[in-house]
Length: 366
Image 1 (cartoon, rainbow, N blue to C red):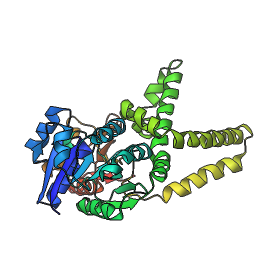
Image 2: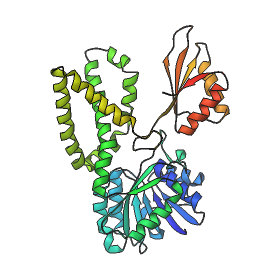
Image 3: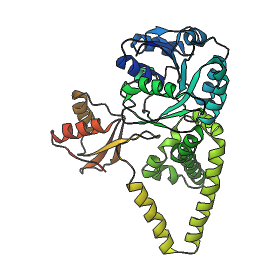
Image 4: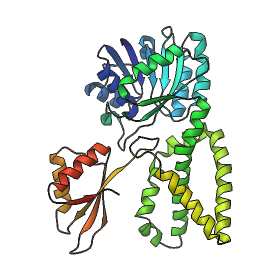
């Protein structure tokens, strides 16, 4: 492919897409823009992009493809701004946001200009942010949803698929409404539940300070997504209001049923409830990337002596294996403790396992 790609937003996703397209098609010219001048300058110095645009208008006029890689509320504003800019005929515009109905509806204003808008949502991420964390292979094996409107030309969808071919993502096409319902179930609503569990723990801590100490284990793990950006989740929830309100109704009914089981001490129904959940959960894909970034954890038995953590991490550094998180699960004087090391990919975890077992450490994967 040849032409110019204009990426608006030099964060992790925008930077990774720019880098991937640049690596896949050497003949494509990549222009970048970000309201944070330091980020876009860094993108240029890291050769993530070929050119810095001084404004959205300046970059958009040159583009054959426009990728809007900013939070959902700002993405809608960018689409509205594009309406007043003279764009190339049949330019393809896409975004990377977690909600699709509102932006696709807003983008209908571009139809009269001959612009093809195709909503997009790459379900990939990282525990790092910013253009410095960009990786060309970030989307490999991830689900990448495209949400064209009923008026989008099929040829435009095929051209966008070709542009994204180098991501090696699993590209699927859904309607905006269907996407938002699915994203609500597997991403948006779980974030609400995680935040509510944290609020409940905070409430109980007012009467018992032991709550926060006991919550440092599994509770912290199952609620880790509650540490996501409050501003981002405020906007996502407001943009996916209809789907989430329906889910609340179902959730409240289900919690009422569970409460009734417990109140009536219905052991058989309680067992069935957890058994059905376990069965469905155990069938979920293990290695596929989803809407919520995964941790790939490796557990390492370590003796209790000074310097053991630096020793373990030193071996991994020698092999250039990056750790995203490290935690001591249990350690007592004179006995073995357990280190939990988290990695960004399953491949890194496998390398770490070989590295550490080769140096005499016992490791296991939960």
